[in-house]
Length: 80
View (cartoon, one colour):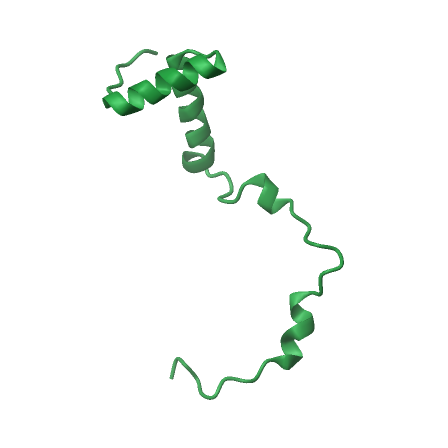
């Protein structure tokens, strides 16, 4: 499928420069960008990248729950 895409001069120049640097065509980069956007936004993939979702934390760092007993109760109900 073909269609026309109009870009401002600055964006077009950056696209040309990046395509040349990566050894890609403009159309190829645009195709990849649209596919990536669709996978992330329109097709419902997770909002967080895999690096965040897969992070297991720092093994020797104390858990958040270990400090709960140090918290003071609220003075009054903030929603009252």
